[in-house]
Image (cartoon, rainbow over all chains, first blue to last red; front, side, top):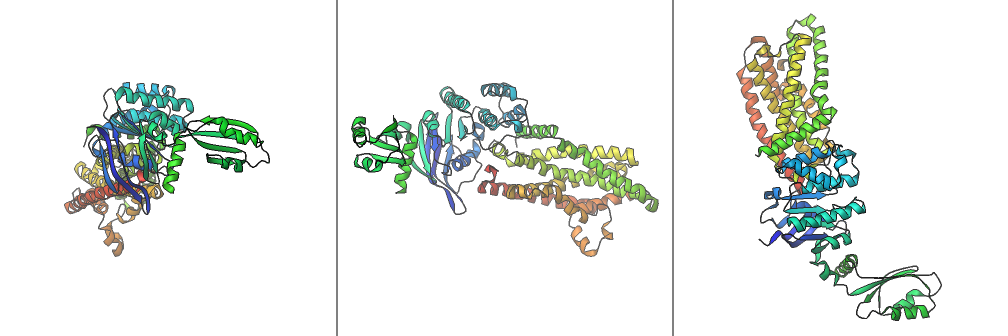
Length: 304
Length: 261
């Protein structure tokens, strides 16, 4: 079996609202696959169906070659939006799930995860006393309790401080390397997905707009992004910029973001007419395109 | 049915009970208050009616509390998972709906039995009332039938909670009281108006409490009451399980298990 997760023409509606309009994707064993999209795109709906928490309208799903409900022992899910039982202590919550998944050496596993996610001092605290970041870490511990073959992570780093979020990403990456865990990762934080995922699918309004590796997807934009901030003046900035062979991505008052074809890109040639017109530059950044730029481009094209 | 999952759920209910004072009060405090109120009432009434009133009121209280406990534990422990927004994690685990039901029923049974013996001992100490005066076998029969009906009502209310969410959680505490006036707990069926009798006769609880009074008076079991109570319970428990499963399916279809509020 080459694919750990196979989703074909998956559809789900809530009344008249179509949350998923027939999405298809396959995740290879040991791959981290990102579902990327804005809020309301259908990412959580897809994850919830895969986790057997939501019934699909139609379509076919196979996880490790079986229906999701038949393979729950080998998978797990963690989301920042669900809670563990607040009245139970941290270690009590994990012990319950260790037993539900019937894992051997449960206490050893619990201690390892509590230590890994820096919850050692909180192990005897009731879950309702945890901060949102600590609760999210506890959720991820639960997601890893059974050393799942397939792990579904739905916006699991929301609420974590940057240091812990980075550590969590490292742990996820290690899981892939050391235990060949197949991971479906949803997020609307593009750089996180870019850092973690082997392949990504852009989801918007219940449809997959594009699937590919992060590199191949970023190649869809062959532009450098130049961001310029001008010193406010009376010169007609927009008029001058429109004469140049550039895409104006953003223009507001004295700030502009420009997309420039990479092959043609010569900064001094672009700046020359601006400076010649007497417009003074306060700040200037040149950067490579990010997944955010690609997403905006793809979503824009599809909308047209 | 997997034993380790049922054990895991029982452990969870135990943790909830030991960490939460309300769940301990359910077993001891409220039953004790009911017993004291009805017990002291019998002190006053027996001057007019004789000692048999103790059998009716205190015996009725002990068994009614037992039924109420069996019903309420299913709904209140279901609500615990709603309140803690833990359904997402619970139902994404390997646990099946039948394992959820069996574990909550077993835990409810344990708590109901503790409450029953607690009240049996206290009613003997405080009011010299021996619940087993009607015969151990008779009490075991009536208690079993009551417990089954408690599970039925509990599952039905839990099904409503899964289907409609926490907005109808008030039924968790109130549903049993809706049945009580029609169940002839403290008064004989014949004393009620005819139209109420026609409703009451349907409930297994009516047959159980009628049978209980008869057993106290004559030390004999009226088997027609017992047969009706167990017969209707056997049908209703299948119906309650079916409704519970259907509600859970609807909840999964509508996304109620994944709700964030």
